[in-house]
Image (cartoon, rainbow, N blue to C red; front, side, top):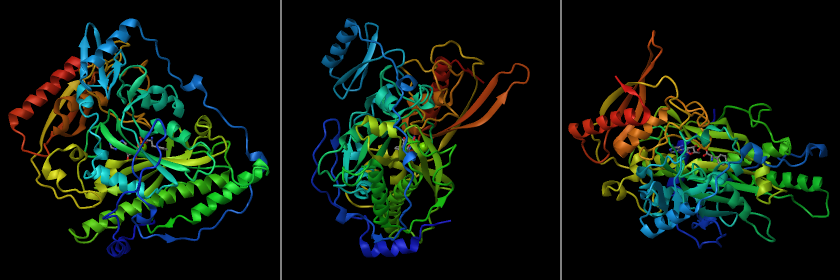
Length: 578
Ligand code: FA5
Ligand code: MG
């Protein structure tokens, strides 16, 4: 077990001004499809950096271990979309003349919305509710005094320019192709399901992860003479129909990072020798990474032939070096976050328990091998990020045919909760000055709860339909909202394809509660499940915990909300209340 040495952190934090203040450098040049954020110069990276001496892999790998490149197979991933009629074009023009941003419009048998100036026509696939569109465009990551923005800048500072470019992508609407197909998501991947993802129509959705911009960002790294930039970060708001609790919200913020290495050495050398030089370069870069005291348990090996394989194009030793470089870079990031948090909390609390963290094996369609890191938080394991070695076809498509590299994606809220001691993800959306006034640019301060208002929980029990009512998707109406997760997709909850509609999906109730109660719903949990012995009908009971972060809720108000939840469950999902 490797543990974070908190005492050392606190001492270093005191002497090194860790992360409590940092400033901004000039913006780099902007490629067409992505907007840059500002970056923080290396000299101001947060932690005290010590340089380690790591062993280098010296053994060459055999030439025959380099099979031809794979390409993404479109028949396994691509989605079809229908062509628009002249009626559709007219309605889109109409949406633009109305000019009301993010309002869902129903007129003359058509529905749609204008989102950041672009019109979208709804169809049978649409499941995005008004309550979600209301939150589009808040750009919390771009408000310098907001904890999410402070966290973003701290994360960017651990991946300094000019080696890394930093991007922000404000428009949340992406094509199904960019969110899933180009990344190699199989057609039946649960992440594609309407129970997990907010679709505007069959071709466009609210991005479920920043990886939707991976292809564009990798293209920005395509070889250019003299460029020292070999990596990037991307920050954006992402949307998922997900469960309701203190660490899940249907809109959250992600950051994605990647770094690639090209074939190295003189072009006159054989490809094999240039690959050897590349491996040496990765080993040198690994040695030169900042040393960390952050100690993490390794639950699995760096790869596993069946469950977490090395790609067929890749060499084992090179992959292990890449994996170690990736993990060490992220350990440095997490250590920096904890140092900053501990430096801040040291002024307000007594003593810090050592942080427990572990690397576990993971799966993403666009990386292999893949990993996740979890930390202990409130007596449970909290997943902070996913990462892995980039699938070769993805680099090929972006014009990086001679490269290898790693990528990661993290939830900014998860880091900000640890950094500022913020106990509930809903607080990030608060407009209450008692929350907002506690934070200011470049400063890490421990959140001081301004009050704890009483919770009020109510149960809802119902019989679910015994079988799918029809082949129509369960969430097909525009009035309901959505909840659930998945860039990785949650196969345990989701019905993978709309060809197999579930009688009931847990995200259906999450969606209804979110739409009715908004951020007044603190969590929703299944408390009872029962199958009638003779009829075989299934009954579920969910406990909804209502609590405002800003005021005491009145009984009548909660009763009205709860009644509305019941009505919508009956009307939208055909349940029978008990
Ligand atoms: C992804 O989204 C991948 N795109 C990450 C990735 C990028 C992997 C590049 C490999 C290479 P995942 O679904 O696990 O993976 O989400 C990434 C992180 O987002 C999680 O580790 C967690 O920190 C955060 N996250 C996920 N769901 C939520 C949620 N509902 N609320 C808040 N944070 C969330
Ligand atoms: Mg995950």
